[in-house]
Each structure stands twice: as structure tokens, then as C-alpha cells.
View (cartoon, rainbow, N blue to C red):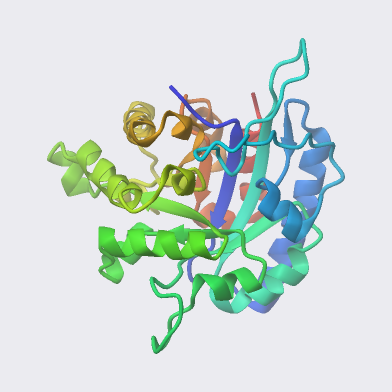
Length: 309
């Protein structure tokens, strides 16, 4: 199954946090990520391609070979593919990020600015600017150094009635602002029981791809989160995840074969005790982590599992 050479672990804090708790958590994650980067033999910690290097510089003190040039290829991934040293296998890159509530962006930027951890937001407006009380634009988030924006999370779709079209518009706004959209897809229990799981996630992804060029689509990250597994304490079965990820990879490749390298993450009750088995599955390029991302030890164990060959 096609996949990315990037392993990406993103924590979604949802509506949790306080200034004091955030500081303790972010400091612990920074220290843990530094230690992890110093022990990896088969992976190296790095940020997305040129955009993040311009924003944050070279972090962690790890030797990270630069991504190859896309050679003008309109479908080249924003993460790129790393050149292998002759006679040595291509290494994978591990990226760690947290998506925090909007009020904590400034604090997060201050505490993570010199670390090897990226940060992002959990949503952006479908509008660039204007009289939209309570909305936060992608450009505003970018001013606080955000790299990622979660788009179309199932809780947004369910509680705020976000349609596939709105999700597509938000993905465009994130790209326009220089953010990496993490487009979330996933079926409900009713849809899975009715045999519509694959059809549902394909429709959700396709609606976004319909408004993007291949070059824009190459900037995406996709996150599959079965709605029925989120917060349930029980992850989807490996064969269920494998089947959905295969559908997502094929849907991407149908737009352009180069999109086979777009990262596809899994989310839905990922924990330290099941992370390694999940990440060994072909086509799973990392995880979108909910509750476990609020506990430094758990989150770092999941990151370490992603870094295990």
C-alpha cells in the first residue's frame, strides 16, 4: 500500500487546558521530544518542508538531511521525500505537533518556539475575513506560528453541522494562509453497520479534492477517525483501518499518482498499548491523538511507538 516516508503524530487537545497545565505539559513534551530525537536510530525528527524551516528554523540539534527539491512537480508533497544515502535504507522522519485551543496559541508559540514540536489549531473559519463574529481566520492562526489546522473533525461536523462543502472551503482557507490542513474523515457506527463506511470516507475526501489542484492536494494531511471509536476506549480493528486507509490512498492517487505520499493518519482511541501495532500496519502514517495527548508520558510513548521500525 502506498504511504508517506513521514511519521506524523498530532495531539488534539480539544477544549481542554489552562495556562498552568499547558505550561507543565508543553515543557514535559519538549524535554521528552529532545530525548526521543537523541535515541532514534531509524527515524529523525523534523518539521515540514521549506515553510516550517523558514518559520521555526532547525530544531532539536538532530542531523536532518534536507528534503529534495520537487523539481517543479505540481503534485510534490510539502513534506517531500528524503534522498537515501547509497547503500543505506531511506530513513523516515518523525514529526510531533499539538493542536491547541485558540486562546493558548500565544503561550504555545512562546513555549515551543525553540523546540522540535510544531503546533496548530483545531479549526479555522471558511471565510478569510469579515463580519463573522466569533470566527478565527486561518491567517490569524498563522500569525502565531501555527503549522497545522484540523479541518472537518467529526465533532465539528456533528455539533456545528459542518457540511462536506464547508470542510472543503476551510481547507482552501488554510492553504491560502500557508497552513497544512489536516482533513478529518470518518464514518458513524450506523454508516459502518449499513456497509457505507468506505463510501462515506471517500465522499468526504473527494469533496475536498474536487476544489483543489494536485499541487494544493499535495499539501494535505488526511486523518481517518471512525466516529464510533473516538473516546470509546476501543480502537478499530486493524483490518478495518487497513481497508479504509487503502480507500483513502486510492482516492488521492486517482487525482494524481504523486499523491500516494500524502500522509494518512489514524485516530480513534490510540493509546500507548495499541499504538505500535497500529503504526505497523501498511498505509498508516501516524496518528491524530485525543485524550492521550493531554498526558505527557502517554503522548511521548505513542510518539516512540511511531518511531519504532
